Length: 543
Image (cartoon, rainbow, N blue to C red; front, side, top):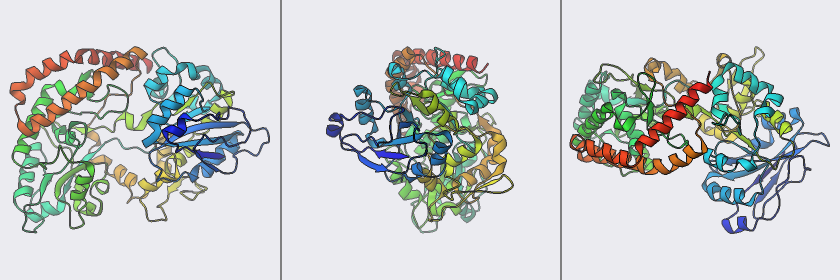
């Protein structure tokens, strides 16, 4: 296996003249001008084994990439008789480098991971990509078995023309519930308060947190809730008791702020009456001083400084994947809060969105590849339970997972003192690349009980009965993708700015009609119709 790390600058990238090794080429490492090359042992020992160049994007260069040359990654190369020359890019530079790469036509054999190419990239470059429908049917028995048991996997990769240009993934061992509320139990105990059961109870508790000095330092330094990022981020969670499941953007244009109503029909959440009532309530919290006044101006690092203060967190509640992820050393002070009853008496929890666990564009083959069938046979080996476990947590042969004689597996605590969540990103592909684990396999895997994923799954029963299904990952026509790209920026920005304005200044009742008119003028109804059409096509593809 060979690995090429691309860190070249714009000038050097423009000067790139060395062609990338074509599919089926020899074992020479291909290095673009200005790149840093790191060459390891080849995966296959066969003299005539084809070498494929595969580009992948990592979030940060702080994470090592040695795992590409060992463990399950190398083992699958040997098993399928291929060599992979990895071209590693980093997300901070990728947008610029991607544009240059696509424009040059000097393409790798494949792109690995959905960070590489978006739906728009795929739609605009189909002439340089390989259509995979027949090739998958002929060369990927593992993936075809997945399609037979889980129709959604084929649905998400099939475009509106019935064509397939990428492979899917579904992350293993994921919870049903997304971020939840955690409350400072130490503060509740100090003030003799009960766990809140309704949204009104929460308001009463937050008032006590802000006014009664629960940390006992004699200073009025407590916040009911310290957050950042507004409607598209953490502050949206406060509105959950009103049933306003405002979904984060999944990278698929237009999905942000879409939801499904009680009858399963797509709706745009920021124009619903329950959304308006929720914003009014959050404004009341802000007006009373129960929210951090810097909520709309601070970034996440400023929130972290307040919630992970070694002398104790300054926020009465937090929302997150797990308490330790949000408040660090103060995690022992916090406990999960069951979903609060809202004005209608119902309880709502945000379903772990499909787009966090399921995606397309995990392997895309270009026309530079001379043997797509061989490359797909290699990729198919990742669609097994054991391979998917290893590409998410690290390899068995690298001592990241213990395989027991009884057919069970134990994900091991990192021996370097880091958290499992952190180490998994360093020793595996984690969220990216082909993978799928059957749910029947889950019971064979034991996770560390005191680490992120283990904690999250143990806490899932607190709220899983209240989950609300989120808008799925849909496919759009090329024209729809272009229209959504044009429509969404202004509409999203306007919704965000109005949310911040109404929470801080109030006035939503008197300004609501004008707000709706402005959204319509921006093309909201067209956006909604596109989403409804895409959702209908998605539902049909599941049949």
